[in-house]
Length: 111
Image (tube, rainbow, N blue to C red):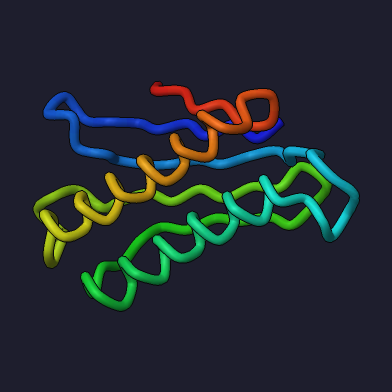
């Protein structure tokens, strides 16, 4: 199962997103849930880096478990904080859509 953990600040701003695990919803190379989550998450990271010109802390591993951790710098360090939060909110909505249709393969938790 894929687990998406979203950490928010006291003001509800997203501080970090961690995605781990594999859906195993299909054979290797044909797992549509993993492909969808990967496309959404890497698309978002690239959008923030390109459009919002933001420096992110990114950790990833391509082992059997799959792992992506994205941490957003404190607001005082952000170039365009509203743009970053809007893009992150779009990512969460996209992942919630996948979760709605494939609950047995992906779970979103707020930490």
